[in-house]
Image (cartoon, rainbow, N blue to C red; front, top):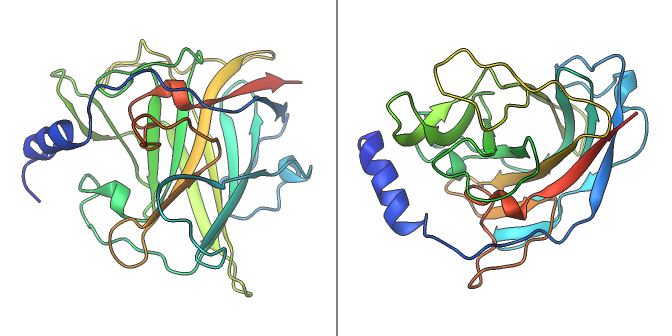
Length: 253
């Protein structure tokens, strides 16, 4: 890998172009409150997950549409005052972690991507903390691009924002269950400083989207998500820089 500065420069020149405002094509979903949060262990047996409100990940954002045996996914959400909780059920016939450096081309490894916008305001979040696009790697590290303490936009670890763990079932078809507890931060967040997460409350609306990067032994081949996106110049891969394409979820008791 070249230096991080060179990586970001390349990304900026090739990928991160200024775009017109885009929007998601999804209604606001309700998220159920849980008094007892799930244990983040990759085992989907917690009482919090018992209700059957699954949401599918079928919206193609990049690449080609895979066969269901190659990739398919669905998820559930819960919340309490401390965090937004996620359970994803993933079918993936080949797990790939090609790039050992967690800050190098993390989007080209298999990863679960959680998009979160604390006030559902939408808009640019590439070089600021208006919103986050957390890439949950197979080694459970959490990566996004954002300004560091010097104000430079670079790939950074946010492991303290998202506790997560996955496990694959032993029985066929060997589904993966991936659990996460997301501490929600607003746009006052400063990397490397003492930050407090938002206290979640009944009636609050968050910007939210979930996606999966599927890489079958090489670079990413498929990228499917939870919310349909209006393309801009034919491009739907917009969530990493524009929170306007996120869906919205409302916290309810």
